[in-house]
Structure formats: C-alpha cells, structure tokens
Length: 69
Image (cartoon, rainbow, N blue to C red; front, top):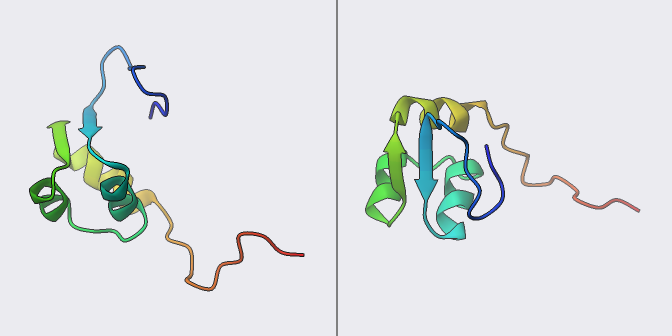
C-alpha cells in the first residue's frame, strides 16, 4: 500500500481511486466494494486482493478511545 499521492508501486495487484469518504467506508464501515464503486470508487486490477485487504482490517469498537488521559 502506498500512502502518498502520485507515488506508485512498480506492479500493483490492485489500484483504488476515489474520495476519502469512500476509503473510510471501505476500511472502517466494511461497506461492500460493489456499493462503493457505484458511489464513485474506481478499482483497477484484482478485486479479490482489495476484498482480502478489506477483510484483514480490524474494525475498532465504537467506544474505542483514540486519546486517553
């Protein structure tokens, strides 16, 4: 995964393009990839790789404290 704009891997298995909101939906809401594509996310390459990556992300609990005193 490359986190910098305009940077790329020599041979990516999949490439995602879209607004930040759709990436948040992909990673944290676990929204279905097909729904995100209808909303404007572009997937190039192996969709199974994207779905496996999505499944590997652990969703934090809603009560997760980002900062604790």
